[in-house]
Image 1 (tube, rainbow, N blue to C red):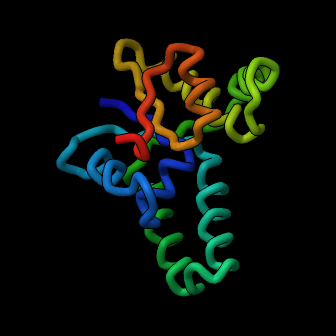
Image 2: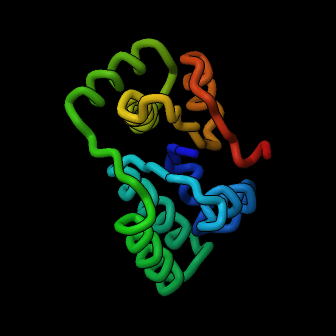
Length: 149
């Protein structure tokens, strides 16, 4: 199956929190799934790691190690959806229709781009962000919330 991971889901693969176990099962090599991430997700994942480091929840060495591991996976394990003008146009439309943050709108717009190119292999949108999931459901997108699994 094809899964599109937003940043809230992606972080769970590296930092233990609610929803980590379902994410690890979904992303495990034995599961055989294809995982797509928005290219810009690397910025938000780095932000999440550094924010926790600054809050004292992890040391710099651990944050650096997690970033190294994430970067390796980003280059080898995940399929990357690049941001295009078309995605930005869709994100603007989503902002007009839903109470999303700008980044969440770009995430969902990226999903729609993947869905269009995937043909009959409709991707599942994976997120733990309630507002983002609600917007996806409004567009009849198949969703998976690892915190509800």
